[in-house]
Image 1: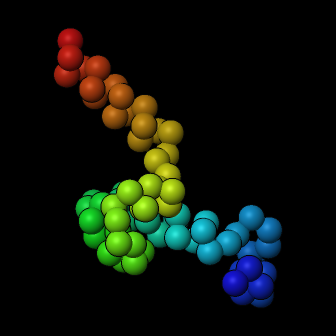
Image 2: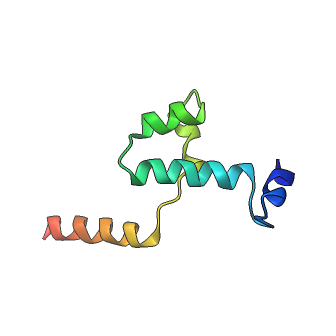
Length: 72
């Protein structure tokens, strides 16, 4: 599969795993549920989706800030 990425001109650092991670993260960012991501990735168990999820640091900081504001 890596050969396909090279043939597309993407170079090093691209793999099936990185493609699936991007796919899953973008689905979540667009508001789709974890269950939908699970089904589209073809996983039987929800906990199998975790390795493919990547939360941008900005979103992480915003979520923490919102939690902090709610507790004050």
